[in-house]
Structures are given as C-alpha cells and as structure tokens.
Amino acid sequence: MQVVDDYLHSVVAADLDPDEFVVREKQGNTVVMECKRTGRVHRVLNFCDNDILGFAQDRAVKDAAIQAIEDFGTSNSGCMALCGRSTPHEELEREIANFKGVPHTHLFLNAWMALQAFMDGFCHLAIPVPGFSNTRPVLVMTDILNHGCITTAVVNAGSRSGKLLTNSPEVRVKSYKHCDMDHLRKKLKRLARPEDRVLLLTDSVFSMDGTIVPLPELVDVLADYPGSTLVLDEAHASGAIGPRGGGIFDYHRMTPGMLMAKGVNPVILTTFSKFAGSAGAAISSYSKGLERLLNACPTSIGTISLPPSAAASAAEAIRQLRGRPELVARLMQNASYARENLKQAGFEVLGETNVLPMILPAGVPPKHVARYLIEEHGIWVSPVWYIARPRLRAVVSAQHTNAEISKLVDALDQMRSVFYPHSAAVNAV
Image (cartoon, rainbow, N blue to C red; front, side):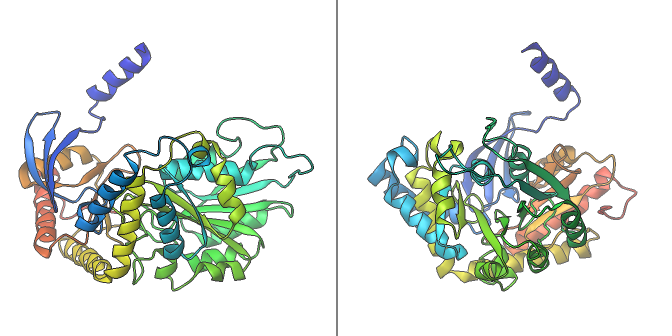
C-alpha cells in the first residue's frame, strides 16, 4: 500500500483531489452541506445533482419506495436468475418498455454493470452449447467522447468480464470523432468486413458537453450495414429532451421501429438516477433472446438485483412523467433561460440541453472557482478537471426558478473579477 499512500500524498499536495461534502439536509433546491476540508457548514442553491424533474423528493415517488419496502423488504437478497423478480421489478420493466417503445427489458444495479453485461452477452454469448457455434467477429464503433461507462465496457469487449473464452470470436474496437457522421462513414467503409457484426455505442446526450447525437444521420450510416446494432445511452436524454421527455427518439420525432425498418437493431440504456429520482439501469431491445441472455451475464447473475424500493420509485417516476408533461416544458424553459442569460453575461455554454458546461481559461482552477461560488455566493456547481477538459458544469432542473437561475449567473459574473479580472468573459471553445 506504500505506493498508493505516496500517490495520495502527491495528489493532495498538488491540490488535485476532489473536495468532499456531506449533505446534512435537502429541501427542494436548497442543500445544507458540510465541507470536510474546512469543517464549515454551508446553505447552498443546488446546481450540482441530476434530479432534473424533482422526482427524488416527490411525494408519490417516495411513497412508492416506502410501500415496496413494507411489501418486499429492503433487498431482494440475491440475483434475479436465482431469486426471482419482485412485483416492482416486473412493473418497472413494463413501464420502461412502454416509455422507450421496445418490448423486452432487463434491470441492473447501474449503467456500468448493464453495459458490461450487454458487451459480454452480445460479443461472447454465455456458455458453450452443443451443436451451436458463432464464428462471426464483432466490430465495435464508439464516439470518442462517450461516457466512461461505455468506454469501460468497450475496452473490456475482448473478454467476457475479464475471462478469456476459447469459443469467442474476434472483437475489434474503434473510435470515431465526436458526432462526426462523415468520419464514421469513412471508418466503417474502411474497417467493416462482410462477416462482421457491426455494433455502435453512443450517448444520446453527452454529459460533459451537452451535445445531442444526430440520430437520423447516424441511422442512415448504419443502414448500409444491415443487421447492425445501435446502443443509445439515454442517461441525460430521458426526461430532458423531446416534447414528452421521451429521450432521443422523441426529440427527433422517430421511433425504434423506424430503425428496425432500416435494418438497424436499437438497444436502449435507461438509467433512473437522473430523470426518475431513483437508482439503477435497464437494457431494452426487440430481442427476447438478448433479455434472457443478459440474465445469465456475470454482472447480472453474479450480484444482487436492484432493490424493490428503487424499482418501485423509478416506475412511479415514469408514471408521473407521463401524467405531468408540464415538468418537461418547465425544464426546457429553464434551460433556455439559463443559456440566454449566460450568453448575455458574456459566457459561452457548450451543448444545447439543461446541462451547462463552461470551459474555463487556462490557469483558472475549476476546484477553486467552485469553492469560491460555495463560500461567497452559496452556489453549488460541479468543478471538472480530472475526467475531462477543465470546466464548470451546472445542471438546471425543472424545480429551479428564474430568480435562482439569475443568482447563478450573477455569481458566475462576479467570479470572473476574482479569478481573471483582465478577461471580459469565459474563453469557452
């Protein structure tokens, strides 16, 4: 452990480690938190977390979780394959299938485990079966700015959860420029072989840049490879884009069936930690075989299933979303209001959603900026410097008021005079 301890000492000395906070109280958009570095307690406006529709504090959503605990206890105490699914699991699978427009869904504890299971199942199937063999290799294409859960899954695609299988065919992983369909088309033309199973994975909304994938153009590229599979990570799209908050298909006025008609198999990853105020993830597709296969993959059969309370609260959040479209409209209005006011103040914000990434000038440390906003203005945003290009990242929710958003903009405006007084605006690129 000496190397680890020495490394941590160096990280702390260089002031690269994230600040730690303990949330002591949470009510609406206001959070009371303690900074572990200073021991000080701050009451702040929360532009940090991803409860974009407020369902984590919604009475009906909380009641659904409480009732599930009363009916099924706090845990399923095993995996679905061996211990079965509870009624809340079944209800959530049904709600997700209706929400995303595809019939077959399997639940996981989180997106990282869901995507690893998908790669295990799709690329390597499960166990050898007498009389069955698969010799078709897989060509995996991934956007260069995909979320870490996708990147980790594709990096490990050459083995089944780290276990090399002699019966598995070749898996090749290649990246393409961010949302660049011309680059993707050229790479596929050069790399794809007739026997390949073509698999492409992408975020629908990119969490660090706020950009939206050009789905129609992407489908047109993949249509040249009949039988190809497209995995869409809807983490920051569900509840956030589209007139009904349905995600990337709703946004582009498309349906998963349109992809099937063009020979492209849609696979949808839904996570419940943002729009649904809960936890966990789901893989959904048209394939009953994939659903059953995911059940036997190591990150499903080798661990506990989603707690019934998390499943019940996510299912209720989806029902609430369906019955309260005004929340989606308010979220979009708040995002537009924030972006317009930041623009008028001289800031340039990346992307086009309620995720507000702002690149900082060279030499301006995001962590110190975030500390200043907390301590001097009572504003909590996320500083990012160790997983992406240095930036501040604020998340606007449907629960924020115009006055609260204006307070965010004013605080950022005053921050500039402290950290770069000779600059008129954030030099975003």
